[in-house]
Length: 230
Image 1 (cartoon, rainbow, N blue to C red):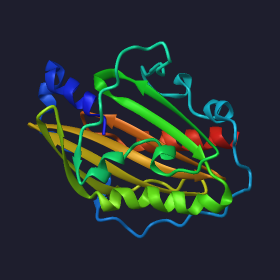
Image 2 (cartoon, one colour):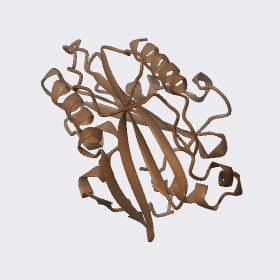
Image 3 (cartoon, one colour):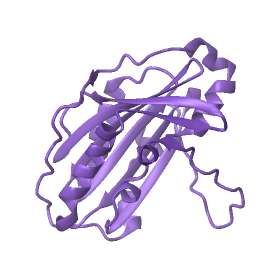
Image 4 (cartoon, rainbow, N blue to C red):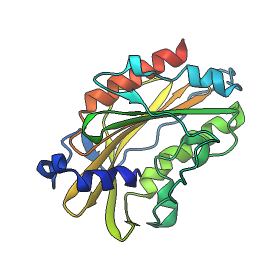
């Protein structure tokens, strides 16, 4: 999870009033049965630039969100290593889809930063028919396998838990969950939608140190599906 964001929240006076806040979204606790992927359309995106152009842009988002520029070869600031988790495999949760499941034909991602340390992360990966169902199954299995785990970020202990999240159906198949991180009285919530659109899988993550309105995720997901469908 985005541990850097949690550290930023921990030192911000604006977050003091949010200490200990829980999530009032429509989390349902135990997970229902996994959703079965729909048959692929046979249209596999093989050009990362084409897939990137199909993701939401800043103008598609509500409020004051701006694109976080991607790293370039000229960037000399080292990327901090991922904070370890127990079990280790749970550290992959919310990683880009193509990193969680190999074999994609193209992948793309975009991140937006908003007020009060809120972020929106969207990534997509297109898979051939033979790998599509397995990839969708693996993405759904990860939050179920990591229902409760812990992490350590620079000596700060973090407790994580995942819960099912009720969302309107989207795309050809979809599911959703919430990942909550608690550390030293602060709570960070990531509401996540996993959606299939043809042969493309997309992950939409809304993260904030406050309650995430489930309607915000639903609206973003619906908009992303419309844009992927062109």
